[in-house]
Image (cartoon, rainbow, N blue to C red; front, side, top):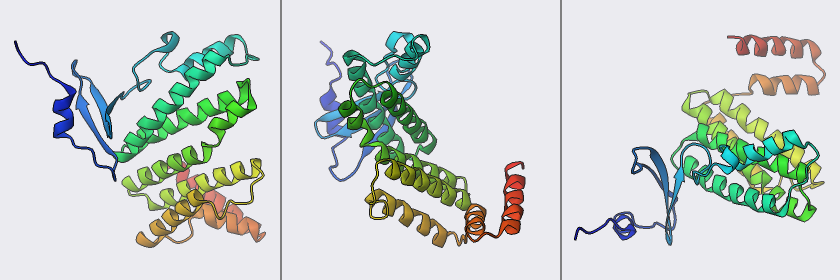
Length: 243
């Protein structure tokens, strides 16, 4: 009797490394590519498209899409306990895949999955039946924004656009600052994620010899009430975006 393939064979050839995120893309049985992440007790396998577990809730690509459809029929809907549980599952799945994308430097895909998570957070915040349940997700919003900003920055660097990378960090920092204000927190400057993004921005600035970007110069001009200079900088920015 022929010996069947066993997960032991995979794990023996792919040892777990505790100090790193081990991820690879391999062909599935039907030829489609799948993501595999090596974890201490085995491995996770995730789909590349749609929902990471390959499920199609209610015939939709994701549970978030299913919830949006439900909301279109009942805009004032309040999520049920079952819907909250299913949303929790999807949060976890997209977290794992986002980590995988970052590990293998697939930054556009990491941004896409971060945007999905942020959108689902927005939906849950609006339609949640319980504030405590809402906060179980909202407490991670800064972390998701950090990953999204990190991915956008590294994506810009991969395209040899250091100035766009700096602007990606600045945009992320602004979003985090707005979020901290909504939490009525005064710990923005001391927050570890904020400090890591500032460090990333300044390392890009130093490595690629980038001075103040046009966006930063515009902000400086407005702050110092140099409105004629600000108008000129706006024109330069508009010209750049129209190219």
